[in-house]
Image (cartoon, rainbow, N blue to C red; front, side, top):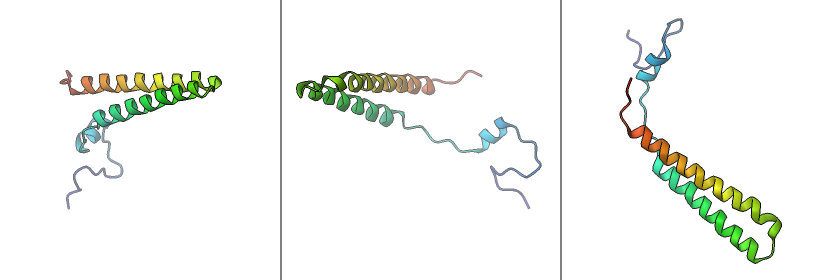
Length: 90
């Protein structure tokens, strides 16, 4: 009886490369992830403006900082997306 494809028998010496070859990989949803994090950054930025308008200055700086972190995170996801689409040179 043959073991199922992708299964590892107990006691076998499979390398990590062999295991990764057997596992079907899906495409990571970089686009939707980057867009949703950028949307969160926009909402936080608008919330910071509303806090400033309401006179709650002590919270504006931290909410605005969180907004900037979301935009930077979104940009890094886009960079990762672009790099993941390039052919790998082994």
